Length: 288
Image 1 (cartoon, helix red, strand yellow):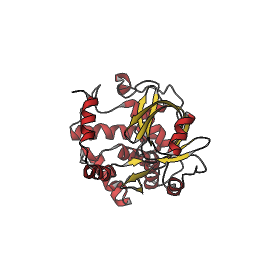
Image 2 (image 1 turned 45 degrees about the horizontal axis):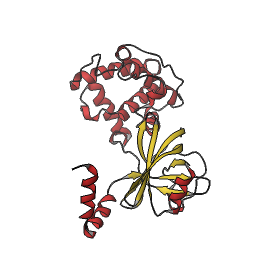
Image 3 (image 1 turned 90 degrees about the vertical axis):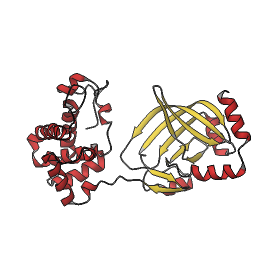
Image 4 (image 1 turned 120 degrees about the vertical axis):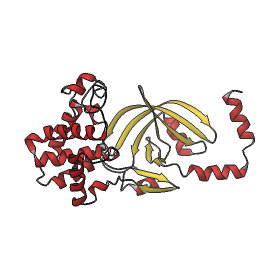
């Protein structure tokens, strides 16, 4: 039985009760919220998804009976703005907000597929811009703010305990996250200035050994990424005199920015064995 037959048979036995249950179940799946605009239409969607990076493509599902959705498709071009905290009213009013969005993309319709009561639109992405912020999340048919919470930044005392445990090698491996690295790196940039990188490197090596992570050419400590982040965090924290304030500021800006290195290197710096062993300078002009 092919996929088309399976779908057809499933549809034929899809009862009204099952349909209602599915509609309710679907509302439990969280998603981002975006505004799609053309010259003559503006619509709020919660179905925007990444599809491909080469070429850059996204998809969006638009109701087949939506006049605005038809206008988006008919135009062939549309602009995406991913909504962030504070833009709840924009999502409800379906009006283009003022100022730069957290993520914005210009798109060209590449293909359209009928998918039940929706049209699945595949679009090629052109010009793209990114700024700081936290997204709105659509969940249970409502708009909700999303902002990560970090227990090690719950208070100044909690952060001091976190740093002390990391330095002593007693911090559990699961607690050593990217955000934790950013926080300690920023605090070291203020506490130690000229020796911040060396202290961070020694601390990572020591912690890896303590939790059983091997520092080899394939795993563990990465010289280039550690040095790159030390440089970035020094620049982000240069105006601060309090390590705690520097840590909070850096985590707010970069605590979830795990792929920042893509903006500095045109090749896969993460898996490059030479870069893991020795410092490889960026070959691109990054934002910091």
